Image (cartoon, rainbow, N blue to C red; front, side):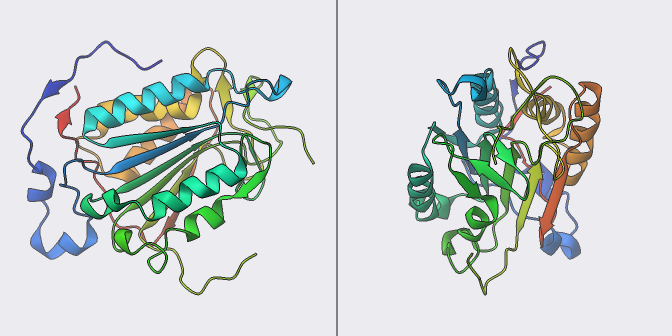
Length: 262
């Protein structure tokens, strides 16, 4: 679980970081000052009852993510154990969610099993292509998010190779063309392609544990790319996998938490 040694303290409800950006660089940064700062959508598939495929410990990931993002001033919406059809239906609702119009950022978290080439599994063991999900939020498909930062946090295996012998988020198993290309989008994966993602049955995934710890310490001061570097360092310290970041025209992003986390 997350480190609770430090207590959160209130700070001013102003966009301090935004004020220190030179005017000639404003276009290189996203404005993140709405309240809530953004909406975080968490999809967690636990595969309970699926014998060896159960993702034991995944509830800790949801709890920790929910806590850290709410503390930072983000609204969190959670989706549990959805089938492929239910997942796509939920994503369609998110795509047209009126609340995203009034916030400055969008974060989608996928906690599941997966395989190579960015496929993750819904709770009924049917695969979903993350590329299809991302294309649902390109400018022409989701006008409410046009020009806004869209962050995808993907905690699932991306292959069958190992970095460490603990539990991994994979299972044993075996198009459409788009004109509008993704932009203002970044995806951070728990592992590189063809590699499994590590999970501790008692604490949750190393990816989420490390992410929450790094956010708690650095979200108020560091830009996302610097947080990603810290994330990699923290995952290595905890015998986790090597994360990967994919950037589609994504500018500099500060979480700009409403609460200062010490």
